[in-house]
Length: 249
Image (cartoon, rainbow, N blue to C red; front, top):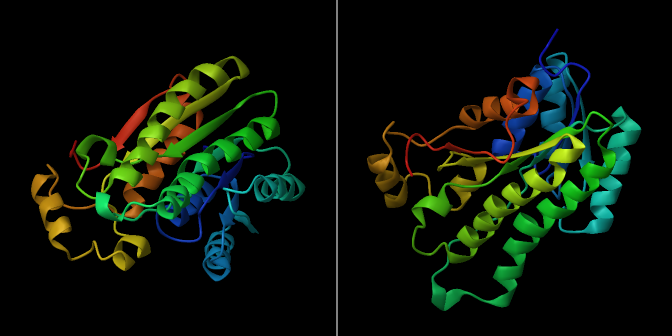
């Protein structure tokens, strides 16, 4: 029997990058997976097609996690597709590095609405959808809260909030048999880091110099950790933050 057989997982922001890798690994471990996306329908459908072609179960469901109406719709459709939810991966996130001179209300709210409010709304809905056996919430934070690079004040603040929320909700939801943990990756090569100009940049080179394992990450460096935290292998872990950063901290 596979590790996550008969489990249902919702992965937010799963149309590409780390989220897509997580969705595929959860499916390979036996879970039925809801591949959530905000706008990249084609990417989400490709992830679903890949999962199904490998014998797994998945559906793509649109929803902007910063909208409570969208989140309620996401979980209602997830329930309709697969029944009660057992696993939530709060992966949806946005970022942009800007110096303090460029900080404005629009960019602040763009990042906080997805990275913090979206995480809270999705978790709220998941708690309602978990069965009597509880569930596992896995937040995707970032090592930026340790390394605090210049230009990252808004993004680092959002991920600092994720660290704190993980601790609070682990205590709050433990009595309901719901575990809450966080994985904080270092730089990972994704479509997003390519489009943001990080890949091939001096920032990447400097990151690799200061990373004990000497390289940036790949989505398949992160996804197996999510499977671990989603499974009974981690049944005695809650409130933990795993640094998946190649040793940088």
